[in-house]
Image 1 (cartoon, rainbow, N blue to C red):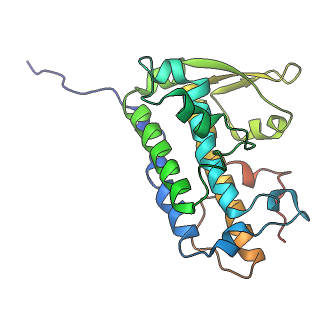
Image 2: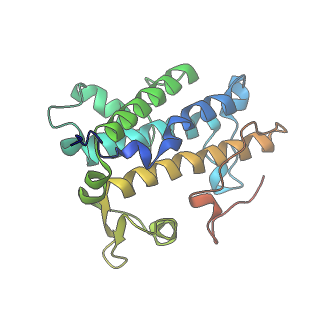
Length: 218
C-alpha cells in the first residue's frame, strides 16, 4: 500500500510567465534617461503616457485588482498596508497610476511594481487551480472590453449591455498579465519613437495581438 503524497497544482502552473515579466520590464527600461522616460506625444493615444507613466500604470493596475477588487478574498486579514498606502498605490488622484507626488523616481516606481508582483506570485502559490477557476468577483468595465474579451477563452463572462463582467481569479490574473505585456509593448513603441531599439523579445500573447488593436508606430 502506498500513500498518495501528490499535492494539487497551484495557480503558479497557470501563469509561470508572471515570474519572468518583472525582469523583462526592468530590462526594457534599464539605462534610460529622465528625458527618455518622460517623452510622450499627443499624436497617438498610446503615446500620451510616457514610459515612466506606463510603468507606474503597470504597478498600480496590479494593486487595484488585488487590493481593491480581490482584497477580501486574497487578504482576509488585510494586506499589511494602511489606508494611506493603499490609496497611494491603488486609488490615487493620478489617473490609473501610482500617486505621482510620492512615486516620481523610476526606482521607486519599479520597486512598487516588484512588490505588486510579489503579492501576485504569493496569491498564485497559495491558491489551487480549482480555487482560481471557482472564485469569482463582479466588476463593471468600459467599452474597451468589447475587444479585450476576445483574448479570454475562459474566466471572464461579460454582459455587453450592462458592462458588468464576472471574473474568475484565473481570468483576472490572465488579464493582469496581458495588461503588463500590452503596456510593455507601449514602452517599446515609445522607445522606437525616440530612435531607441527595443530590448525584450515580447511574447505574442494578450491584447496587443488582437485584430482591431492599435499597433501603430510614431
